[in-house]
Amino acid sequence: MDRAQLTQETGVAGAIARAVAAHGPAVVDLAREIHALPELAFTEHRAAAAITDLLAREGFAVELGVADLPTAFTATVGDGPLTVAICAEYDALPTVGHACGHNLIAGAAVTAALALQPVAAELGLRVVVVGTPAEEHGGGKVLLLERGVFDDVDLALMVHALPADHGHNPQGTTSQAVGRYRATFTGRGAHAAAAPHRGINAADAAVVAQVAVGLLRQQIPGDHRVAAVVAHGGDATNIIPETAIVDFECRAFTMTEFTDLLTRVRRCFEAGALATGASLRIEPTEPVYEPLEHDDVLCRHWAGALETLGYDAAPGGGPRGGSTDMGNVSRVVPAIHPWVSLPHVEAPIHTADFARAADEPPAYETMLDAGTAMALTVATVAADESEVAALRARKAALRA
Image 1 (cartoon, helix red, strand yellow):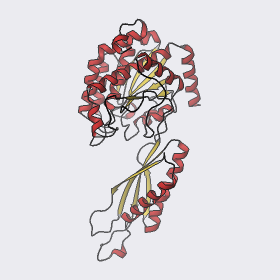
Image 2: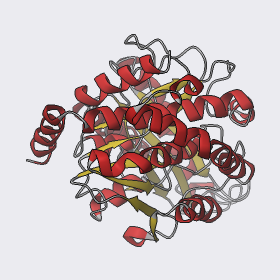
Image 3: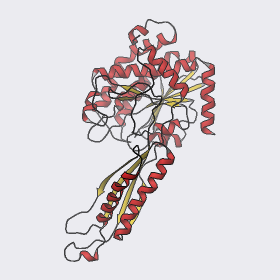
Image 4: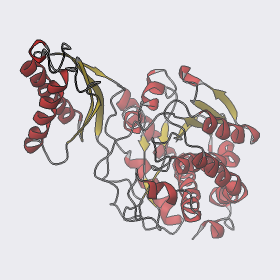
């Protein structure tokens, strides 16, 4: 059945659907506002304010600037023994704005929280919307984890929109670990015509490193990824570049593979330094994102929620690639990060076409369905003591 039909049902599911119907227009307005004013990592002041203002008006206890991150927050309702974290992302990408649909992620999180509010006492829930800045770059969730925001959380979830050719079920999908680094070559400047022999060309070191990485790609598995961009390669054609800076990242589907890949890529940069005589410094620029580990209990209940809403919940779908700091959360808290398809969208994420599609009415309908499904997932888990026990046992195992 669809959301409208579900509002006619009795019990918890009907109460959830009626809450979504009541709050849906305000949440759509919120998501549109976030889309219209895209903000980059750690600068999402307007988005965080808009989300927390809405939740505060609805009776959530809001704490701003949690974990010493100005654009992070928590918004809490209920005081039951089972704590659920619903993660909201709201950072955008440079130049293309909300081309990853984080306005929809934030809207779905708020939808789920407002849907659970009227049934929280009955289900014994403490519902916490965790505002997580800087997912695209910066690792906001990693910092929140390190600073204790997820310590008391029993389960965590969020959803991510994708184009139409992906499914709605998280089972069988994961994400790649990713680490991002800055390689700085330091050489010696000289006049490029009068005394080039007296220089050490840092830009040449960067070129050698990039060629080595390109050749390395022939010998790495097909699901590994290495990407690089020259952030600085010199200042003028008549000056031998003294400094060159290359930003790079490595991705793989397991932490062991990621570590091995990073070692091999570092050697490519060392080759550039050795060949030219430049010195080399490699530093991480943000936390490492770990691969997702979807919780089987939550996956099963997510599939049931989709079936309740009339969706095909058959396993499958989802991307083969990409990374998220929700992976780090999933390593310490039972969690899911399901993919939801936008049925009208063919453009891939991280494109201007996807950004435009994320602000269209069908996207917002999918967002409300996704929030409803998250709320139903939490509700059906919370109503089953054996499933709650299984989640707590897995949390203990993850943290052992």
